[in-house]
Length: 186
Image (cartoon, rainbow, N blue to C red; front, top):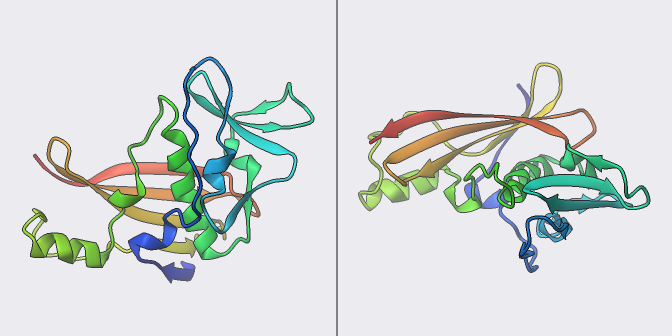
């Protein structure tokens, strides 16, 4: 693990004020590019759009209207800093909220050590003593792919902690994700 950077939960939150789009008709294309604009380290690549149509998010080159890319993160670029990759992983989940593939990952659910201690202080942390760090983490994996790992805490139907791993392509913000339940109390 090289280039390790530890963050707090607020680091990846949206930090540019903008209005999120409202999708009124599932069958009409709605631009979601303004979602990416809400993250300071991310931009839409020139000549690209991100759209939601029929409960799917697509990347589209503006001049080639017939070309729709399923890997909508191809339309995203940034400064390739650790913070930009953390923001890109949260932006990815934010964009999925407009589809039927919503992951339930909202930025307020991201854990860090301070938040876990605060929950414990107020009696809302049912997992006992904290034995590991929950801070969001950026690093380069063994093949030098940028990677981000963070945990989320959910209380719907019982307390659950989920681990989210995001592995980015070299020189791109395209990513693969893995999510698994890390701990649960029902």
